[in-house]
Image (tube, rainbow, N blue to C red; front, side, top):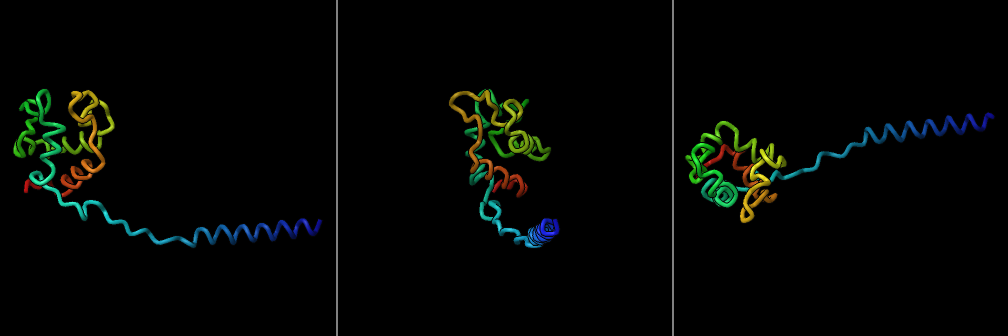
Length: 131
């Protein structure tokens, strides 16, 4: 019986050493370069193309009542009030509220690519510069 208790005690000691080593041996946080640090965005340079293809077309955002996205100035109110950020970024997976919506016409995208989302996110985070 004494050998069993000794083996149990040794096992418990080794386990406690192992657990303490796991919690004390933390790796440093990885250096991650944020995409927005290297991605230059502006409405004119790369956002307008995405908006024209995905948002500003007949039956969608060319009507002033739902936001005219044919021009930067037409979008400005929705940019300032956060509607575009909400619908394109936060609600993007919602088939109705997310933009572009799942019911987009067949010749229009039903979702943005990862790169397009990064462009829009970085542009919004930078204060949506025009030039």
